[in-house]
Length: 336
Image (cartoon, rainbow, N blue to C red; front, side, top):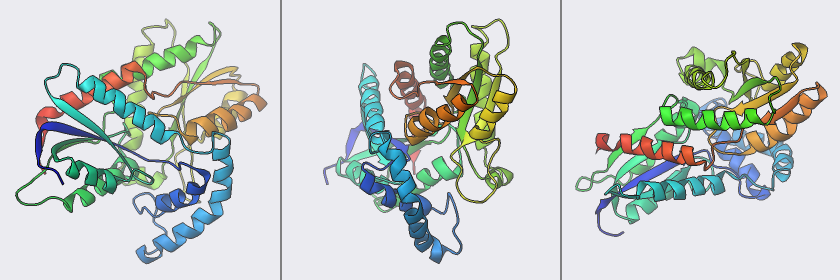
């Protein structure tokens, strides 16, 4: 371990993670289903054995999906590029030195390994930024809880960490502007023809919302803010819809599913549709396979010309939005 470095502020980007090879699919799924913040598989003692069983049952299907998008998830490559771009921007004339790290919840680099590196680098001031704009205990909640559990192991009396957690930013204006810009670019591909918008969000068991999880309210607030910006470019109201994708298991999930929404839109005469992956800040299997391959095929069978809004990834406006988000939270660093 090096000495304490008081001159650098560490920024940690927390994300889901994803398998980096087809061989990693099953262990990734096992880690995912082992998380009781996402799903409780009977008593806690049975969580991991049942998770291993489910991961085995699902791995072949998931491997087939990943094989269609390059044989792995691109989420680490994209998050790494986001981190590098953000670090460059933060270190431009701010008078403060920043170092940006990545911590993944379910695959490498795991949060615990990232924390070990931060400790070895001697950094004690941290801004921990969840890359899920909309808070849910299943996403940001789980990742932040894991971060707190792991960093507590390194917190010693004479070397307290100063940490600011950024757990939600669904209505942060620069984020809204970055998203609206990409939607406008997507709309332009219809060359002036009539179109409709479908905001497709990652689904969540309805029980989460019933118990007070703010995820759905956050999604709706983002859509309201984005639509407000879009109306400044269009004289007439834009027809928009909200659906949910990627449900798993037999419990009741948020509705309508994106598949059902496509069926409904076909029945109402929709011909051109822009799908906006509203809850994601980078491409992964839910954009590259579910939307680009599965939903596009379903839409085509219903006579709908489906296009997808580009993910935020490393768009200039998004990187600058993250920079502003970090800088806006610097003054609130506090002993944790």
